[in-house]
Length: 357
Image (cartoon, rainbow, N blue to C red; front, side, top):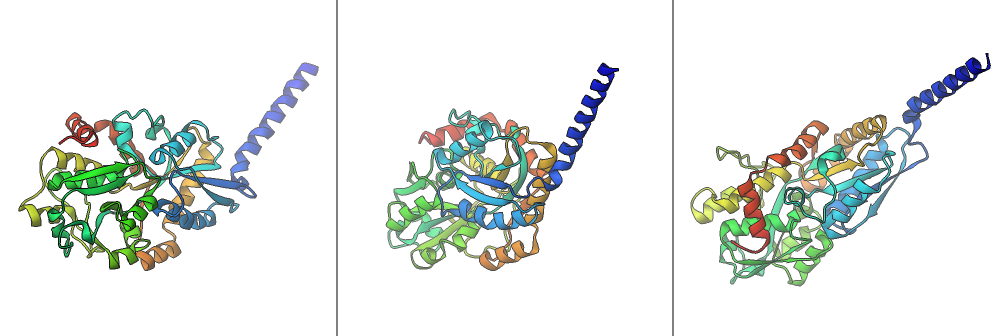
């Protein structure tokens, strides 16, 4: 009887543990702290958004945990990405938020040890990328976006060679055949913006919300929007934004100054990267193998926060347009599509990064 009683007691204990584990997620976050890791310096586009969004995220997580935004700048965001991928516990108490670097993965950058498709995707945020410049970037000044073709020896600022805030304008200027130099090593978008204000950098790329928010005063006095980027399909179709009137879509700018639709290897590379990042600009990720029930809570909270009427109203009031929510199915699909990139595009991107034509 003793072995039977012992086995029965063990089964009861196991059942109790299982029930506890099953019941745990309902109140799991009460009294706990959720860390949101941002791989860029404080004060930039991503950091500002993360801090604003965290308040709405907390509202929709049962138990309303304390949320701390922790900045972990380094290697253009790769330091934070690697940290969450390799070292963060899969306990639902850590998430990574910020731009993602599809090119680093596609090119096999040794600095990126993480694989995006192996993260647990929580949700994504779309935010249109724009190119903007100092008005004195060209002789006589930039009176309209089309005047950018008069500029010579432009200097771009970037975090690293695959950072989209530097690489997108780099490819756009290559497509427009405008001479320029790419300078890397900045710690974040705010760092580049300060360099732009000092006159060390002439052209940069940011989100439309940052262009209208943090950068608004600078643009009003010393800057100008050049173009916003839109994905173009295989038949040359693209959709312009009804929310943006300060500057043309990039294909429209190109047609204005070059007389037709953009084409060629550099354009193909730019359009591929725009298609990768234009819709899915920022991502929320949990460490691999995070508990499924906790993932469900975080994913529902991310969706609810993104679609919260107060959050939408605040975004629209501040920037003239709402952020776009990207769900798990769509975001995970974009990650998987990295495997479909054509070899010719990668060859062009490698050449562009190396400074070749």
